[in-house]
Each structure stands twice: as structure tokens, then as C-alpha cells.
Length: 393
Image 1 (cartoon, rainbow, N blue to C red):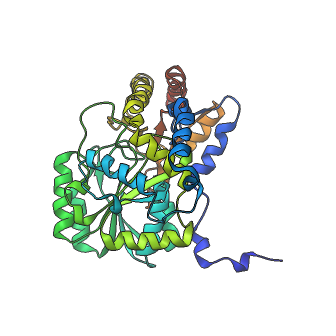
Image 2: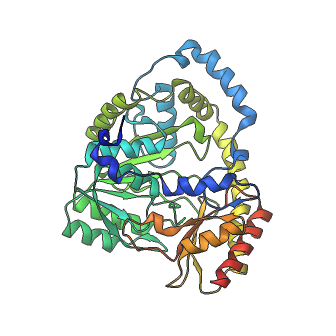
């Protein structure tokens, strides 16, 4: 039987994630991967998983293995409300909903908000996973200008003035792919702009807890609470395999996101949510987060120092105080995809930056480098190899 004719039209614009395809090379013997945005396995709190499991079974018994509410496991909603309070976001537990990773929220947002041809405002560059979630619903992307301090507010104001934008998508803190953070003064201007234009902002914050330098900056949600859907995850500060994402936002949006989830997976794993609830309520996150930061901070420093030492001087690295990535821009005319294939022959993988842009032909000269998955010595060796490749082009 020929099945291709049965596929929905939307599959014509769907494809395998470019990064997922790139990551297939990671398993090759001897390959050093600077490609994935993956937490280091040693960052997982494995020493307490057994203890958490005992606590869950002792406290919840069979309830932890039963169907539960689509909105979320109430003990976890309560703990996430506390976590959000610490980030300056004041919400009741019932206003925090659980998802199967923050990626599940992005797909659900697209499903309820995007009709074919709707205009979505995104940073240039932006998170590839968001593009993958939005693409099947066939939006038109309107790119917003950025610099080393993230989104330029004047660009957002101009776009909202000239276009009918369905929603804005931002990763304001330690952005994927650039590692940049929007400073407070810009966040205040962005908040004023979206309030003035009565616009909806989706604020994606998976990396905010991974700060190695400086002080925390309030989420935009705290500055424009009625105009922002705030999305976050425990993947980077607990374990990504548990798939615990969460969000809070305007009541009508939350209602529809819950309805979508009912048709997708009914609810996120009750047992995994219970583990997360005990992780937070027992104070384990407060004890373990410094361990994660202590693991990543020297890795970030090792990569940055190596970039300064080995990359050609006409390559610029964007500043970053946290997260998992550095963003490097070469001079015009450099094709980082060609560099990627040359680097593969030297057993080093990274992600060419062009995949993070919605406008074809943009970002050819950029690359994203991840530092969480390798040791400091390995990072230095990989950057030295990359530097040699860059000097040959």
C-alpha cells in the first residue's frame, strides 16, 4: 500500500529537527560534541533518587501510579507556586499547570493560537525547538532584531505597530542559542510596549536558574503579568527524562492549553510529578542547584578562555553569564556549515547557527557551542581543533 497520499498537507513543511540529525554523529567513537543542549548526566541528583522514590511511595502509595488531573498533580502545583514566588511571580497553585516538558507547552500554544498565515514575532536567532513546534501550523515569522543584550525593544515596537502579531516568542535569559540575557532596563521597556499594544508574550525560561555570574533579573512576567504566558521546566535543574514542564498565564489561555493536553496525553506522568514535588518540598533543589552551578561554571570559563586563545581574532563571542551555550560570529563570507563538515573529520561537532533563523540565508557565519557535556580539558582540546579549522578557511 502507498501511504504518502494519506499524509496531511501540514507534513509537507515538517521535517526532522536539524539539530537531532546533527546529534546522530555524537555517538561516533572519539567524537567531541559541542552540539547538543543536553545537561551533563553528572548533574542529575542520582544519589537521592532512591530516597525520593521511597518518599513518594510512602506518602502517596497507589495514587502516584493512578490517572490524575490534566492541570497537574496538586502537590507539585503547590511547590511550583513557591518556586515561581521566588522568581517574583505571584500565583496561586491552581494557576500553575504541568506539561510534558516545556516543549509540550510550545506545541499546545501553537495548536490553540496559530491559524495558517498568522504572524508570530521571534528573535533572530531564536530557539529551534520553538520553530519546530510552530511550523506545522504554518505561521508567518516576523523577525525581531537583536544584539549582544538580546531583543532590541525598538524593533519590537515597530513590528507591533506595523503588523498584526498573534504572539511574541522570547527566551530572555541565557537564550538558546546565543546565551544572551535581556537586561532589566530593556525588560521594562518590552513590558511597557506589550502592555501599550495589548500584545501577548510567550516567555520561555528553561535556563534562568543556571546563573554563574551576576545577579538574577526578574522575568518579564513580573513586569507585565496580564500579557505574558510564562513557561519553564525542571529539566535543567532536576532531570530532563522526567519531562516536567510548567506554565502560568492568563486564565483563558490556560483553559485552552488544558483542553489541548486532554486530547494529547491526558496528563503528565503522576509518578514523575510526585518525584518532582518531593524534590522541591524536601529542599533538595536548594541543596543540589549549587552542585550543578559548580559543575558548569568552570566548564563555561574553560570554553571562553579557549575561544579567546585559539579562535581567529575576527571571530566574536557573545557575552553570557549563564545557561549552556556560547554564540560565535565569524566575518561575512564564512559558511559555518562547511566548517562543521571539516570539523567532523577532526572529530568535533557543533551546530551551525543558520538553523536558528527563520529567514533563509541569515546566520551563515554563526555557530552555537555547548559546554555542559564535556570536561574542561576536552573543551579546550575541541576549541583548539575548531580554531585550527577556522584558520584554514
